Length: 271
Image (cartoon, rainbow, N blue to C red; front, side):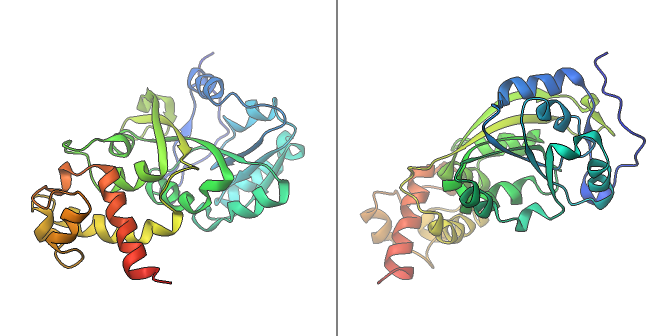
């Protein structure tokens, strides 16, 4: 049977819940994730355990983070209770560093993310990138495509720049709405994310990257010398090797990061 039988449960819209119910998709995810017994895995939003259960068959211990108290209670009372450590918490405030430091291991994070938190959560994880080995998430198709969009694309924007500055992102496979219960209105893509640990761009520069990209993409059709006039002079852009007559949608990730670095060191880190 290719359909996973889920316990009777009414999905909560406020949590953006869509549970994986197709066994072939679960198997595909596990094959890509390829968990090893000694690794430290954290599942975000285990839901009704369609992924949790088969992964627990491989690992001695799995950490799961679930905000829904009803689903947390279901997991605690299930046969998986001996294999999992549950944190009933919002993942957007969870301290992933603490777990990595306590266990002396890099984290492998995965999950079927609610669409309403996927972007904020993946960007939130940037601050923990030195403690993360890799991540695997199910996200909305359009969001996945924005993550990997290149300059000149209609989808290329702030999300593309910020995520590509700190992550290597790979689109693994597409997933149809029929693979979930209840079915979402959109298609999904399962993605792999690897933090750029050796990136020249410090996690502390992200505020400067936010400032630059926000100004540029708010007026994406304007030339940089106009959209960024409150941040950089035309001479500064030329000094950085950036064409001031370029438009935001055509500027490379490298050049955005170069501008963020310059802003960071010239205005916010003078000491």
